[in-house]
Image (cartoon, rainbow, N blue to C red; front, top):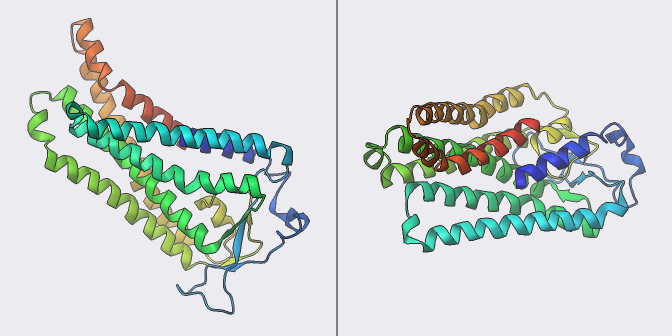
Length: 300
């Protein structure tokens, strides 16, 4: 649900980029004209060039839509949290659902809640207060956790697809192969991989320099908008980020795609119609989630 909201919002903001580009910063409302010097080459920022804050200016020019956008974002946030909390509670309380697949789903729901809570509450506050400023430390924190949770989601989807592959293509070996030890190792590896990749990117951002304006036509601190503000050489940062994106997004996507190709091929070889329907029902919901997640990610 969050992925759909992010994709829709970014598409809407992109259509207004030319009309509301960064050169219009001098005409911002009073109180929003700030000068930023940030991302010192050192890790510790000194008093001479202490970063102030970023201005997230998306949809700032439509004051009449602030309340409708606030209500829409609030509904999305509450719906996302309610559904995912319900899923986690059901998986924990129902003994019949204590399976490796349930562990993957529970962790995926937890990541969704964490990722949503890093973006939407700040967005909701900005709609009400009209305050578009976000401290440099807060922006880096948001970038770090968003990247970490997004990477973890990709790996969790890949591990879940491998679980479905073993269950459908290797049913006799499933219990021995997908044991609890392997299940917990895959979950822990997914979280650690997302955390490691995001740590590398955020650390490189800290070593870059940003020469105002400190304004971004976006609604949260994402990689591409922040990179546009950098005035130092970002070749290394771009190269490392490209490699990390391949490991964090492309590789899990290809692995998931290959798993489902094998799954669909195995299902089509089942002679009985009822057998095919039963086999497909065990992975149809996960396939829908994969399609929505990577579909919106590719659009963004």
